[in-house]
Length: 337
Image (cartoon, rainbow, N blue to C red; front, side, top):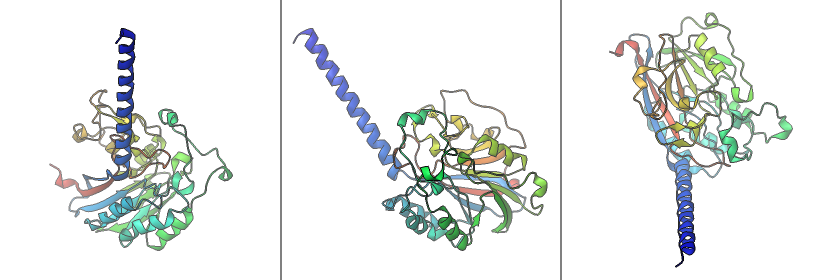
C-alpha cells in the first residue's frame, strides 16, 4: 500500500468513525427526549412559622403530539404522589389534534387545586426552523400575524381547565387556599410573544392576608422576573427554556431561548442572586468550566425554571438535558437551621 492510499484509508476510517459517533449521539439524544423523564424534587423554606408543608407539582412544556402516549402515561402517574397543588406553565400542544391527549394527561390532577399560564405553543403550532438558529439570539413571533401561523385550540383548553376549577392566571391574580396556606397567585401571559402584562403595579395591590406570593410565567424573561421581584414574590415558576435542550458536559446549556444567561437555563435558583446552598447542586450552577456567579440578597426570590417534558417536533432531541417535572415542597422558615 502506498503512503497516499494509506492516508486515504485512514481518512475514510476517521470519517466513518465520526459519522458513526454522530449517529450514536443523535440516536441517544432522541431516546433521551422521548423516554428519559425525571422528577426533580426540591424543598423551599418560604412559608410562615408553624405552617404545614405544601407540595406543588410543576408541569411545563409537554409539546404533546397525539402519538405521545408514553409521555402522557408518565405524567399521569405523577398523580400517585402526595400533591397539594398543580401548576402548569404552558406549551402543552404540538398540533391541532393534541387537545384530547392533553386533557387525558391532566385528568388525574384536575380534582386538585391548580393554576396555569400558556406559552406560544398553546396558541400557535410549531414551525420548522434552521437548526443553526438554535445558537442565535431568542426567536420572537410577536411580529407575525395570525394568518401566518397555525392556530391551536388555546381557548378551548383554557375553558376546560377553568371548568375543572383551575385558575387561569394569564395577566391576572387569584387568592387560593392550599392545605391551609393562603396563596396570592400572580400570573402573566407568555412574554416570549409579548403577551405579558403584569396585573398589579405594586405589592400594595396584593392581598395582605396571603402567606405566600406565587408567580407564574411561561418564559422567564428578565423584565418579568424583575417585576415579580418588585412585588415581593416568594416563588416564581417558569418553563420555556427546555434546559437549553442541548448541554455540554462540564459546561451546561449553550442557550436559554430568552434573555437569561445560559447558566440559568433550568433549575431552582434565586433572583437576582444565587443562593449559596445551591452552589454545589447539580443544576444551578453545576458548570465547572465557567466562572461561578456570586452574591445573594435577603430580598431575593426563588425561581424554578423547569426544563420541561418535551421539544418541538422539528427538533426532537435532548442532550444532557433530561425532560423533567418538578415537585416542590414548601416548608416553614423555622424548619431551616
